[in-house]
Image 1 (cartoon, rainbow over the protein chains, first blue to last red):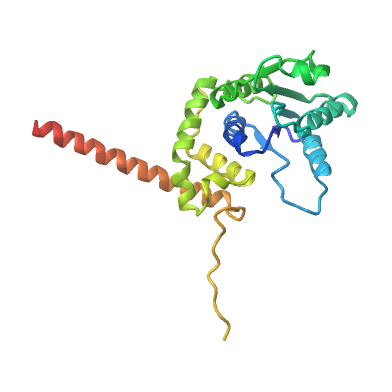
Image 2 (image 1 turned 45 degrees about the horizontal axis):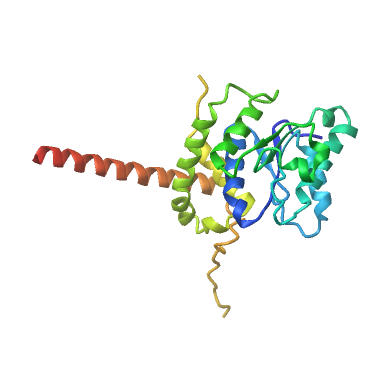
Length: 201
Length: 51
């Protein structure tokens, strides 16, 4: 059973990607959606692939960043495959799935993942502002978008305001801003958006 | 007698805080920022007057 506004984020979880993950998470929530990730539940009892399958099954939308090719990590293409498989072979709810595929450079994927060459792949060039804009433009075209979403540049400005105040907020909560878990980060984003909403006209 | 221990939330794994706590923290940050902005504004006014 899918949740109407859940967006599965399939991306690298390494230190260098942290900035982009933070931007993607913020953009998803600022667009009025709910970010999901394999990192959201720390349950050693649940087999990892089962957890991923469950989250994919519940998410009608997916953001897949396949940009880690220097240090080959095949989890992202695998999870993209699971998502596309659910769309191809699932019931009517699963067939309505939509996804945004991102890479760092344009056309690079053609070398190592040529089967997806027919799909639109968007390049974020490692820039959070660009990633935010891509997510915003994509989510604004989905049926679940509630209203006209402000431009990517506006969301990026809001993201910078969030980041600028994050350390102060973490200090008050005794959290290390460099070691936030996905769940902590999501809670902080949701709470910030409650304080600073953009109101549709 | 049982020793009373202070339980500190580990700074690296803050998974026990709730949305309400996070909202309260942001409200405090917002108040601090507004107070700072007010201070800066009145300092500017004072400087302008002195000139």
